[in-house]
Amino acid sequence: MEKELIEKLRQQYTQNPPEGMAPKDIRDMSDNDLLDMDYFLHEDDDLDDDFGKEGFYIF
Image 1 (tube, rainbow, N blue to C red):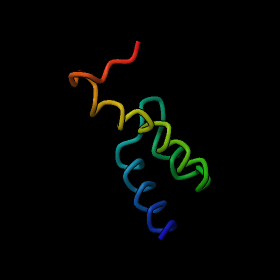
Image 2 (cartoon, rainbow, N blue to C red; image 1 turned 30 degrees about the horizontal axis):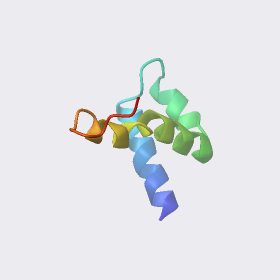
Image 3 (cartoon, helix red, strand yellow; image 1 turned 180 degrees about the vertical axis):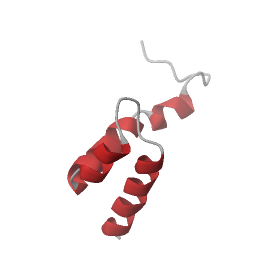
Image 4 (tube, helix red, strand yellow; image 1 turned 60 degrees about the vertical axis):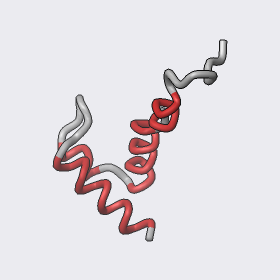
């Protein structure tokens, strides 16, 4: 299962690499580096869903 995810991510990021990276950089990345990059690119995605909802303010 994890190998399938890694190959899917590698293909996705090779076709559309993050800013400052080239497709060759993605192909040369280790599996762990690729998973880490994906995590850090999307780590705040869950926080965006609740932004602006009434009663969800932490000061």
